[in-house]
Length: 211
Image (cartoon, rainbow, N blue to C red; front, side, top):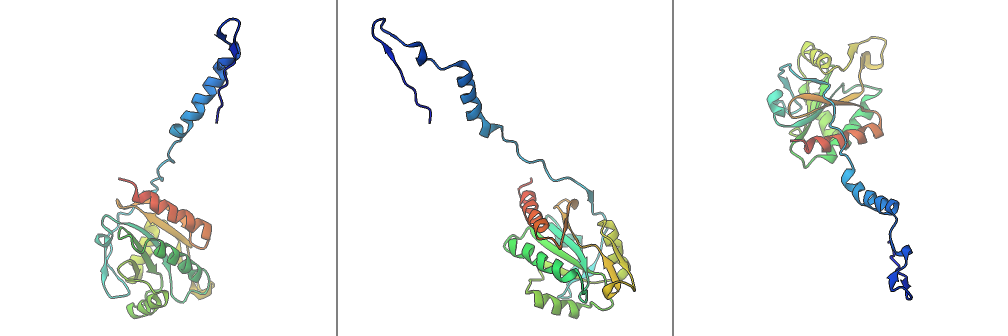
C-alpha cells in the first residue's frame, strides 16, 4: 500500500515540493497495475499430424469401433498387449489416471489397441477391462486384424514390432498419443512417467477449451 503524505509550508501557504510524486515512481506504479493485463495465454498445442485412416475394430464388449466412435471427441490412444511383462502394466496404471480424471467428461475417450490380436480376443480383453474396472463406452480396448492394427500404429507414429528376443515377444512404444476432435495429433507423452501424464491431463483440459 502506497502512503501519500502532504507537508504544509505554513509561511508560503503552499505544499512542500516533497508532496509531488516523482515521474519515475508514477511510471512504475502504472506498469505494476498493467502487469495482469499483459500476461499472455500459453500458445496452442502444436498440430503434429492428422489421423486419416479408417478402421473397424472390436472392443471388449464386442462392439464395433470406428472413427465415428470418436466424432467430436478428444481421445488418447496407445498400443499394448495383455501378457506384456514390462511396460504395459505401468502404462495402464497411468491411463487409469487419465480415465479417472475425465470419467464424467463425455467428450474425452480412450482407445487402447492390442498388438497381439491372436491371443487378445474379445473375451480376453473383457477380462482385462474388468480388472481395470473401466467402462467400455469411455475406454475401448480393441482387437482386430494384425495388419490393420500395425498400420494404425505406424499412422500414429508409434513403434510396434514383433521380436522373439523381447520379453513377451513384442517391442512397442510406451507413448500416449493425444488426438483432438478434428482428428489431429496434438501431443505425445511417456505413458510410464507420472509427470508426463500430468502434462497430458493438463493438455486435455486445454483442448476442451478450444473452439
